[in-house]
Image 1 (tube, rainbow, N blue to C red):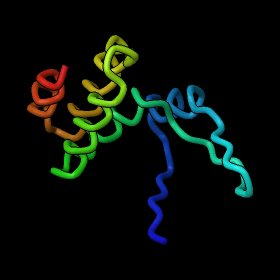
Image 2: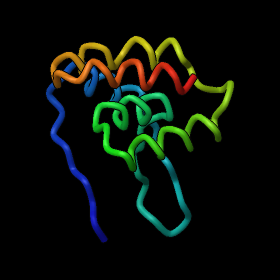
Image 3: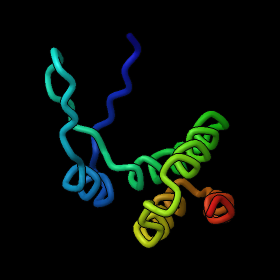
Length: 95
């Protein structure tokens, strides 16, 4: 099974881990997962077509439950570091 692993060093990544929760499935070891808002930010930062499709799905499923203040506060610095500020406008259009 393919698995993505990332080593976090940015303040956002630290905050994302602190906001994460444990997902329990019977018969499987607990798995720590990020919240929907942090997943949106991670996906916007990655910026591949598949990531944008995933973001659309998250927004469609979560709807009004999403904390847009969190989503809008986190990615700007990340996108500036990556030198892709145009993704900020694309993310904003999803709301």
